[in-house]
Length: 178
Image: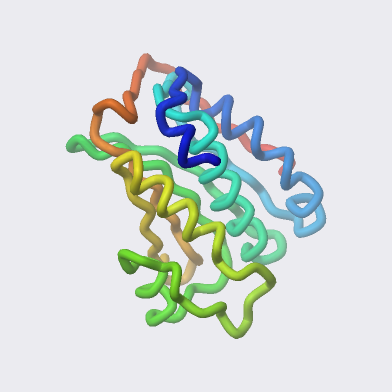
């Protein structure tokens, strides 16, 4: 159903949308003592499918919280340079085994097997997110941050029919539930 929503684009603020998603994880964030940091300029506004954006961020944030260590930090940030626009979600947790990381980053991650130490789920959510973002011209990449945990980069398509970035100024750093 989300695949049909690619053309249902609207203008929305990144921070506002992320802040509307974060409360879904409030109970687990508080139970684990996680600090959720959103380090994005409030002025970033996009024109794209809000449903697809929300689905992808919800899934990536869910995994970041689930696999974050107790009393750790989940950070959400955004960068825009050299025609690449990227939202990242990084947690303090275990790094992934290199073979597992390679499978997640492969063109088709539908076939990777569940991690032995998995905390639930079959990985279908991430595969769906990758498929949806690919359909709008973007991508999702995973990288280990040595000594920190996992960083998920949600790379938006270049400006075009499926995505437009608007920007004014004023940076906001929010700590939610921390």
